Image (cartoon, rainbow over all chains, first blue to last red; front, side, top):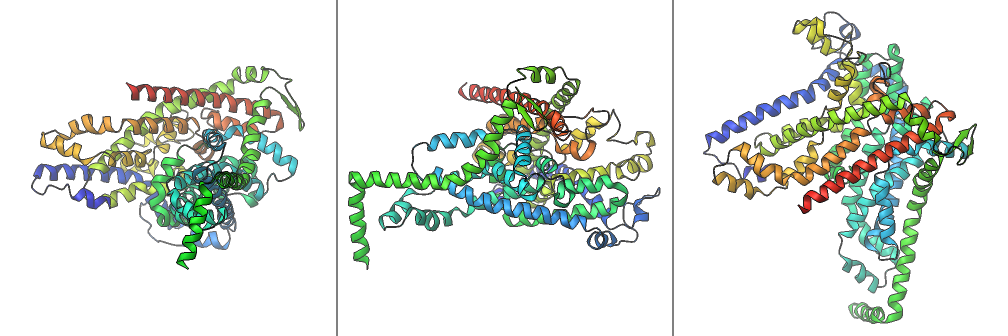
Length: 292
Length: 315
């Protein structure tokens, strides 16, 4: 879409413009190289056999490419797949609850008129800038008392609470942009309030829902602070604390395997990004407000 | 069938304009709204609202062996934190990191943004490659650098020693007192900062402005100076505020790469709280107090920038 509109400005006769474009391309290629180079190094490492990784005579390109590191991860290293599965569980549960609750609350705040709505909106907004660091001690004490510390639900429940405010904010914006007349017409036809929400407005909120899914997924997948304090049992570690454990173990987890692990751990994010890419800019510009 | 539905619509319309039904509708909506809000508000109050109040009160209290002694500490927790050397070091590190990271990240993001705004060939190609760091989960990206910078087998030291012939420069980048700070800044700059947000702002500038300037014979530098920068000012201020807050909260790079070492030189405020929380219950009030001091700093910065922002806009 963007490319096409830019091409309209293309002036074919200006040779100065062509030289300028060439200079831009050179500069961008350099920046792209800096961005991609470390990544390429990891890809190359992941297919090198160990003797080629630990050597004084380092070659950039693998001489005998191998898939042994990937194989080891799936055969012996049962840890990494379990970290990925844990994180997928955290992401899936958090996302489903957050999407449902945020759609409900966002609809109430964006499409329904009731006294006190502005108060709730201000409350939600003020939560967006709270640094999570002040919440950890009380959450720990609270979870000790009710006995869910160091369990999966002990991590999922705070996740739901902490990712909800942004999600509600996004959903509220989505519902606010919808015409009021649709709901009024449905009400005149005798539809219940629930039906108006569920059948009329919610199906139109797909964009907002996709944004919330993408944003919550990225946040859960990148979360470290809570996971490192509330889920310290390696069996329920998420991908971030898990990889840190593996990297600390060092010798048992060599750089070849670490590189392979990094690549494997990237796959879920890559898939989500490819599917939901177009909601990303909206997501970060609205979600950028949120605290961590 | 059409007559029936239109008749009922008319009936309903008459009902709605009447006083009692309208009041009824409002009440029905309010009740439904409350029902919809309840689950979200309940979990938010439980895991955010209650902890905020609790941790604030904790900064004036003592906590021993799973027992809170409310308001027995007065301001002694704050005194203890502000006189603590670990807090001083963490505060200093956080501040210096923010002051170094934010301007560089904004300049780099602006550079990438403007280049992508201006380029007309291979736009998708360049954008996709530069987008890569966003797709890589943060921890993976950092572990990647741990491997790239590895003192023995990493590519950076190999290139320095064997390709550029500078073995003297090869070092243990993340363990060396002199290089660890610069390395942390450089590593967190991978991805060139918030260029996506800036590019969104750049693409929103009307094309006519540039065309008019070109007709007047403006050079690209002049275009940048007199059109792009003034048009982007609001975006830049918002993005700068976001970057400052993000930088103040630096935690994950330290958790993954340095653990606050060498010799506690890279402990940020966030990392300090995390460390103390996991050192046990004796540190709970200390950790809460550091957290709240941090929060006060963030609040002051947010209000100041919001104030500056409003002043600039009215001027």
